[in-house]
Length: 216
Picture 1 (cartoon, helix red, strand yellow):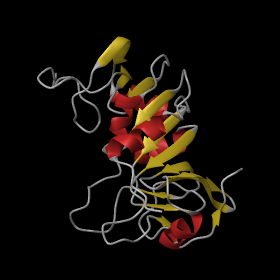
Picture 2 (tube, rainbow, N blue to C red):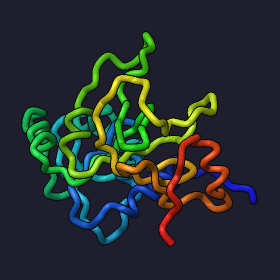
Picture 3 (cartoon, helix red, strand yellow):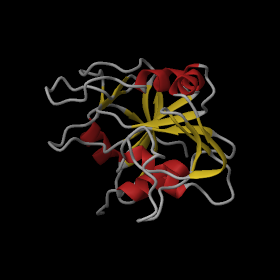
Picture 4 (tube, one colour):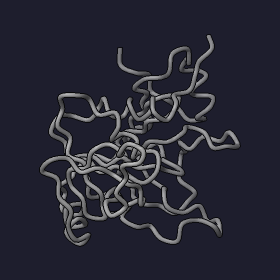
């Protein structure tokens, strides 16, 4: 049976549906910022940005951007009633102090047991520093990763052991991809769900690692 990959917005919606009411959440640079546009109506999720914002809303409509109000990726954001902005040192205190329930980050690689590599690939044109990724990955109560399952050359980003510089060890709890959702456990990867039409055997062939079947 044929299957279709999740679009970026479908993937963001899949992540958003697992965020519980009342959660304090940091959305990392890049694709994770889309999650803000898909939070379930009727739930109160307090979004945090490491540059010093608490209470962000969805992206502003075109033409209504305020470039004095941006997230850590320099994208314009909105501020919900009751939201606040403050010095980034206070923001990092929130991150390091365990005050965030969830952070959603992108990644270059995630190991089967939850090691995270998301800031450097060894290439000369890579980003120059890790930023707040280490603080988020270790400080949040749960670290989730949102990424495409395969690289442009068709290699799995889920690996037995990361070959890129590590951001955190054993910190990733869930990995949301365009083809399937995984849980990282001490025993390895457990499949939570797949896109319609993708069977476990084909998924395991792409990942190249043992996969625990989803719970019945």
